[in-house]
Amino acid sequence: MSLKRLVNALLAPLHAEVVRKEDTKEKPWDHTFKEGVKAARKSGEDPNEAVRAAWGDPDWLRYYEPLVKEGDVVCEVGPGAGRWTQPILDRVSKIYLVDYSAYVCQLWREKKDPRIEVVPCANARMPTIPDASVDFFMSLDVFVHLELEDFYGYMQEAWRVLKPGGKAVIDYMSIQNDYTVQYFKDELESSGIYSGTETERLVFRFHDTATLQRLAEDLGFQFESEIDTWPTHAFCTLTKP
Ligand SMILES: C[S@@+](CC[C@H](N)C(=O)[O-])C[C@H]1O[C@@H](n2cnc3c(N)ncnc32)[C@H](O)[C@@H]1O
Image 1 (cartoon, rainbow, N blue to C red):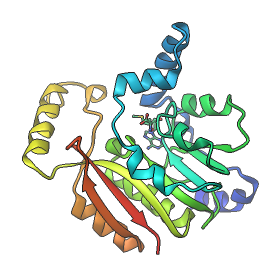
Image 2 (image 1 turned 90 degrees about the vertical axis):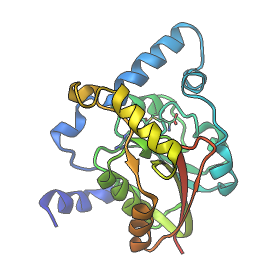
Image 3 (image 1 turned 30 degrees about the vertical axis):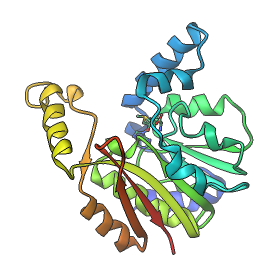
Image 4 (image 1 turned 180 degrees about the vertical axis):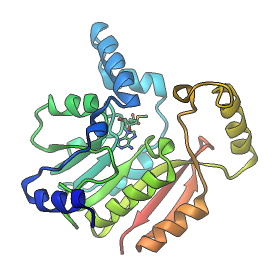
């Protein structure tokens, strides 16, 4: 165990952790949300509705909303402005909102909602959330941006924080049919990935279902996955037996 891990394990009961200096740097979504919320507020619009209008309103409630029961403790990674948080907020007894964007964290802290505990997290580790304390884990439109290492890191944390019988719902980008192969090639070309700078790099990360299933099952999860009607997105449900 590294020194940082040991210190963080000791600090966890105090709800504190040591964070590397570079973890506090501005993250890509800081800017997006800062500007988006500023523009929405200026025009009198609800920031969450502005996100919905900009990014679409796919029928993804059906994947997770029926799984959230009255009084549940929920953990959501990457809530942004709350596109998927708001529909279940009134039902939960507690919700951990985990995000690496300082701006997004601040947005939720400002609500001063006693049900919400904000968890800043830059390293796929959330030691302030106790083991086996969460009924439901969710993350939508976030893992589509994560490298496999972070994807797996959050799966490990989902396994740790979920109660036995708990479930996690996560969407990801998968290449599993002709449409997605073409989409992948078009996105790479249009993002200028072969000629542009690192900041112009495509923000999406593509994964293979068989790899994710292997890793999830290795942790002990039962794994189910289906392709969404947006055929680049797949949704997986992980169950901790
Ligand atoms: C594309 S936005 C989606 C927001 C929201 N889930 C939605 O669909 O409207 C991605 C969100 O995930 C957060 N995020 C991205 N990568 C992350 C990471 N590695 N760890 C924690 N949060 C992350 C961003 O700050 C942002 O809030």
